[in-house]
Image (cartoon, rainbow, N blue to C red; front, side, top):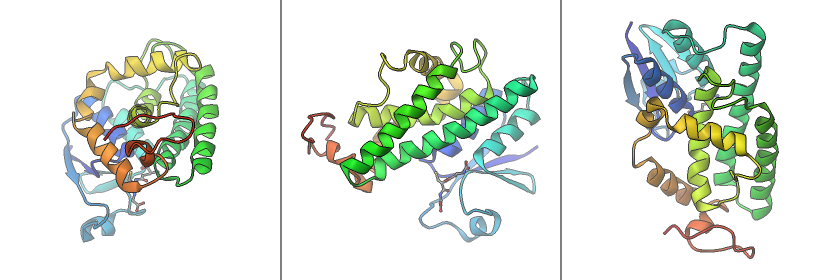
Length: 231
Ligand SMILES: N[C@@H](CCC(=O)N[C@@H](CS)C(=O)NCC(=O)O)C(=O)O
């Protein structure tokens, strides 16, 4: 079945689908669009005018979590757990991970220190909750599941933000999450989905957004001296 993933090259939601397709060894084509100037055909077929879209022959599937569930069900080996309760709980944590992913975006756009810290604190508290749930090398224990794939783009975003403002993922508070992240980034599919220049492009995007975080890029250190010079 012909699969086409409609993408924007810096979109973390697209990355979830890409990682999963790589992991399953599925043949797919990627078409990247310019979200600032989206083509007319995209506006016609995308109900929310957002990427990712997965085109399965003439069918349009949207929303990254749904796209991932489709890929997981359509191509072996199924990554979502068989146990209904565990599967439902994993879906809940996938939604929770989406909220964290939005926080990672807000960290790059909030303009004042106060607003930035508010998002940061909310994210730290969410991470405290996740820390209590992680069972082993992966979220559910020793096997990689769909929930893990959904978290990889969040960790990738935070890796970049941490280079600018190292306050989010620290060992003492989140040992289980950091161990989980390490195992995720050892997966070939995760490596394959991230081009070597991604971090540089994300840093450029942080700079362009001109939020509070971008001050750390320009050596405008706040009073507490956190952060470090990148440019
Ligand atoms: N809930 C959506 C979020 C997707 C999303 O927000 N994509 C962004 C790019 S990262 C987008 O297409 N934004 C365009 C817009 O909001 O107009 C999903 O999980 O697929």
